[in-house]
Image (cartoon, rainbow, N blue to C red; front, side, top):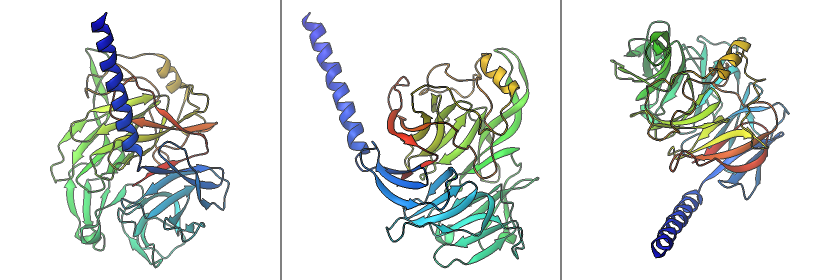
Length: 384
């Protein structure tokens, strides 16, 4: 009896200590989310709300991005991009001269890389916009597969074309060097420091526990000229990198996952859509149903199909690679619809009544995400 009491006390003490540690870790964290046509800042637990901006459109906020210093917010409303300084100087976002499609904010918050408008006097498919001055520079790189890495004199453009992956100083694209001999089929995503990338390549996949067939797999590779590939989450779609370039937020069918880039360990939460990863990779912001159910609304997925729905109902044998020592054993591997990328964002927010949740990398896989905001209408992002 005495032993049982002592064990109970130890468990209680450890649980309390863990709760206090998480509370302390969240104390200085904050985030931005969309509700209607308003952007709102709150703490990591959703206890306070401060209005940051009023948007000119009632279209859904499809993406929010922020620089590593937390100075500038990049906003995608219905495919149109704008930016907002976070110094409190204005509540009106500034429109960007970008065409519909992907856009990326530099890590120092000074410029944006995006698709050039078709009616602009552009010599290339992309433009770099300097936010402070509005100056626009045309760059001859593909808008859907180009990324901006580094800061200051280390800033580079990295892009994939039909032949390979290339990198060049932001102001000297013609001086490009090959950093990977083969380009991915899709889902090309580069780390903020430009050291690694993710992409989908042709490979062998497990049809069952014993048989391999031709297929496609998300791979991690270094941008060092050799680009040795390592399997990641097979059907994953990269959503966002942590600012330290060590972690990446991935959508794997109906699950949102945090994955360690070098090492491959990952942790997933089934029934949620990935929104944002914290700068250090410890937490994710994920979108889910307000009633807490795990059923996802597929209306916004342009490439969902009846075939995919049938696949989600039929459980397949788990793919033995990669091995996760943090995720739920057997959970979600080889199941669900294959996530697909839209043009302006890798994974769009789902339709329906959404709530915002906070998922934690550390701790038991069985720990459910914590509710942050019960009513949100689109994207969210952590503030560094």
